Length: 401
Image 1 (cartoon, rainbow, N blue to C red):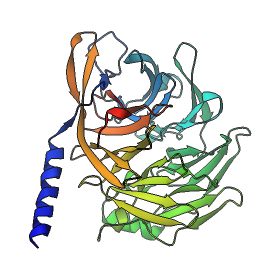
Image 2: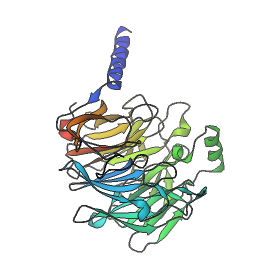
Image 3: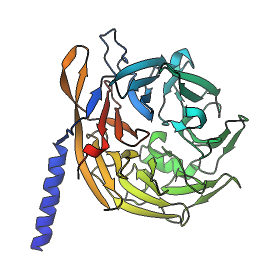
Image 4: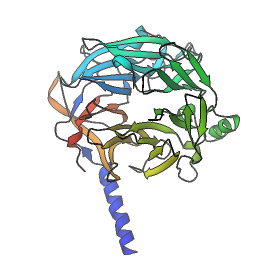
């Protein structure tokens, strides 16, 4: 009994320390992305929440989400120069959009695909969200190509691509319709197998949940070609593109008692050996998902809060992620699959040097929205998603156990 009490006290002290500690590894840095009162290449406030992120060579590619009535951006920043490089206002390419929150899926020829969520114009919803293809030209400038609206009247909430880069798969917002899109033929197929039923909708209404709270936030394609995601209520599905059929796992997403309706997959990462890891938003658990046996293994909670917003593997096989969100602070954590252990780093605090702040300032990241690794896995890049968002970068080797 005495050992149990001591163990609980030690765990509490560690959690309390992480809550008020900051992660300041050597050679980490912050890139200034947002600043209103400057002529430099920066994003304006309330349009700069970094909700999609990927790294291609030296360039970080970011997609933002905006407050109601405002529109997002796609931008590039240089890892080597540690500065913003180029900005494209999505309004100038596809008017009336508000959010890019699908992440970027890499296709052929260094083309990255994402989806948009439309805003509201004159109190009426826009025609729908668009699929976009983003490339970076020789000068490092993002180029956006509009691929159209896959499902009229619906935005695009989540998106992924198959291993060969031929087909996109997504879930619409707010209805939750699953769709496929052939990049070559532009053919679109829609499926209603995971759309919430009337009974589901009644349950969500009772708990005051909105579509953001229960739709599958992220999709993954396994090595065997199956498309994996979550469906209401608290279920995991596998879509087989060959026979175009859904199969639901017999085992539900792990839950804390009384919180079953909050089960929602919001992040995925694939290890070098093909193992799939997923983050459950409802209770903030890290899951190992086997697409063959349909088994879901609960690896535990990195921190004592819900949400697990992003996952990214480093070169050394260590998995980094973002846990927690408002009304608390998000934490950076790592998980070592070999040792089966978590490390809570707390909040990143990296030095930011930019014109006007040549002496540098310590920028602390409290609301972290998305995470990605460089192509070689040596750098981890984090994007904030608040009204004054910046990029936070650190070498994966500097994160010690």
